Image 1 (tube, rainbow, N blue to C red):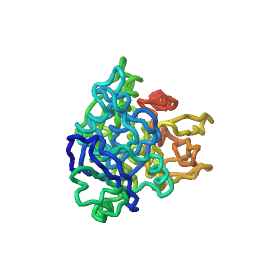
Image 2 (cartoon, helix red, strand yellow; image 1 turned 45 degrees about the horizontal axis):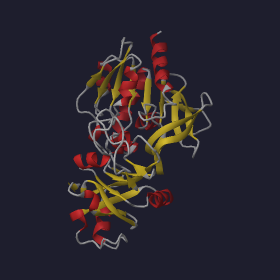
Image 3 (cartoon, rainbow, N blue to C red; image 1 turned 180 degrees about the vertical axis):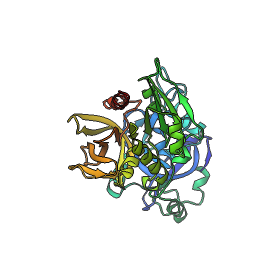
Image 4 (cartoon, one colour; image 1 turned 60 degrees about the vertical axis):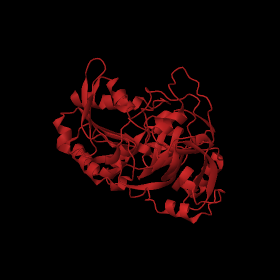
Length: 388
């Protein structure tokens, strides 16, 4: 990715999809070129959480909400130490940020971190295209990156399209180690310490250990390459596997580590990528969704209670497990505990004969909704029962 930041708002830009469709607009954020998988997010707020979620590594995020950036950016809300999206696409960026917590504009932050974006395009048409054709590779070009292109937005410049088509696919990508911590660190319990949890960082968001710390859990966050020995050296009451980017079919290492945890029958909780790792550890397959689930307004039913939750999502892969039967696995009986009401995608798994469960969505969602926060309490209950 090559970038510049001078006079971005007046610089022409073009977005080129791998199937040849193009959208013409203006540079937003840094000027240059960038590539990734084009995906869309349906959230109307919480853009700072989206931008700094490591699960978006190597993805260009299209915001379906037309007006983005009106609350600016602050230094308290990031979920990690940097913006992870490869590119950012908005229709109508805020000209002025207006919020008492804002420290700078979103445009300034994108420029500061060298994130190439585009504004002024028909994001509704782009979203419909991705829904019909599926998530696909994309490039955003502005400034010097457009030299030699026609600049008409009709994607008749073969050179730009060839650049896009030369990029790697998301299917088969092994990305967790690229975004995870390199060294173990500890998030102390808030108040009285009740439990110790070993959390395998596959792309963890900062709010996740915080949600556990609020419940008296001391969280030891380990690298994605952590071994079973590393985990058990913490002497944990429970083990957590986080969200993260890439194709779960490539995550043989974390799958083997999780199987070692399951063999010990240590209480286990997984979120998003962690749900897919549990699925593979139990013997289920995974597959790539056509365009995925991303946003903070996805309906999920907890089949153990019958309740419907409005939930936050960011995933392009899913577990291939039977919805309506109990499955026998090497670690006991397993069933689908949660399901998406939009398309019946598996949104959670649980073992019936030992304390292990996972969900495909994000109960730690900082911007909300908070319907699923009870899942951290469920994890605490498993550790309490095991201790008793």
